[in-house]
Image (cartoon, rainbow, N blue to C red; front, side, top):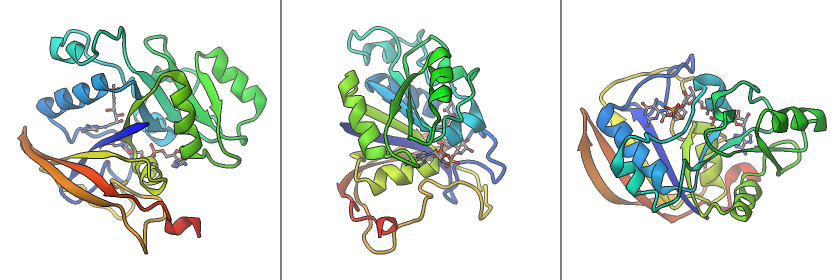
Length: 230
Ligand SMILES: NC(=O)c1ccc[n+]([C@@H]2O[C@H](COP(=O)([O-])OP(=O)(O)OC[C@H]3O[C@@H](n4cnc5c(N)ncnc54)[C@H](O)[C@@H]3O)[C@@H](O)[C@H]2O)c1
Ligand SMILES: Nc1nc(=O)c(N)c(NC[C@H](O)[C@H](O)[C@H](O)COP(=O)(O)O)[nH]1
């Protein structure tokens, strides 16, 4: 699986406010760039924290010819994926509409009747992990559903888990010209945090878009021996 992480942050590294309300950090040029990364992917993944905060749709701008060209003749939208240990995705979430296939990666902690409710609401439910979703196994299982290139859109907990599992190949961060602040505001990588070994990146490109900058990195060394696995 080839994994591309994309997120937008303030100059102080926050993805949203401490209230976790949706906030536009990107401008229109950056949202176009996000659409092109989505279009090149077979699947777009978010955590349930993002679903509960933003109710995202995660589809493509079908009017944009540049976006459609990147689909390489693949019809429709990329699949949508939610990491959701206990099945908290609301059955009326926009991500469960019939615009695209939606996989919910749940753990054994999601009771069988909740799995059935989510299936009835349109989700393809994949069980990976006992208490919490085993992100490595869950992402691996997406490979059985023709997903070879995955875009991870956040939030901070899920991005950290992807780095911690050594899954990330590329990282693109849009840095918008604003300060959000707040010790409890989500950042690009939350979770437990690394204290011993750290993922190492190589800067691939810098691009000015809107009134901000996109930093693009290749991951050259992962931190598979994650400190929170001790
Ligand atoms: N600016 C951006 O680019 C951007 C992108 C996405 C989200 N956001 C913002 O981020 C916030 C949500 O981020 P977040 O960090 O609270 O939530 P998240 O979207 O990262 O989801 C995390 C949740 O997923 C579940 N989960 C299950 N298994 C997991 C695993 N193995 N690893 C990690 N999580 C697992 C847990 O319930 C966890 O609380 C919202 O405020 C949203 O608006 C911003
Ligand atoms: N690139 C980017 N810039 C931002 O300023 C911002 N707030 C997000 N946030 C990402 C988060 O996952 C959102 O929920 C989806 O971007 C919503 O996606 P839809 O428009 O519903 O398809 N992403």
